[in-house]
Image 1: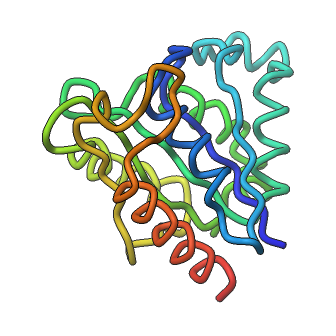
Image 2: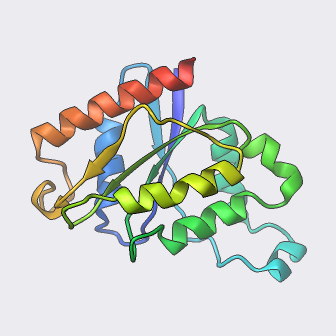
Length: 182
């Protein structure tokens, strides 16, 4: 059984990216267990805080990533780039540098994202690539999931109601699972 940790890039309870991860849990292949992480309690990175000790919320995320076979980032797109809260979480996860090999090095990662605009999260996903490279992660480039006009695809309870998007999500997860298994 493959374990994938899904990390939503928004703190908003009604986030379309969090909803996308919930839908991913529902449609994941039989050989994949997708767990959704929470980054709400991770503080802004501060070297003084790090010197006093890695916060427990960071250690929880680090351990979940280290135990997982792969990472799925569900990234919003803020100002044509990555969301600060998700970048901050990964900045923390990379600390201390000596721990990077245990947590991140060569870990398969896939990018997905939902937005209210017409281009999905293409610019945010592109902006993640140098960060992923710097962290030593192994990006899956065999598929792309860009969910545009998300407000029309999810119901008021955040459930994915669009069959075409659901089918695309199923294909995306199956492809990522094959990439992880290699």
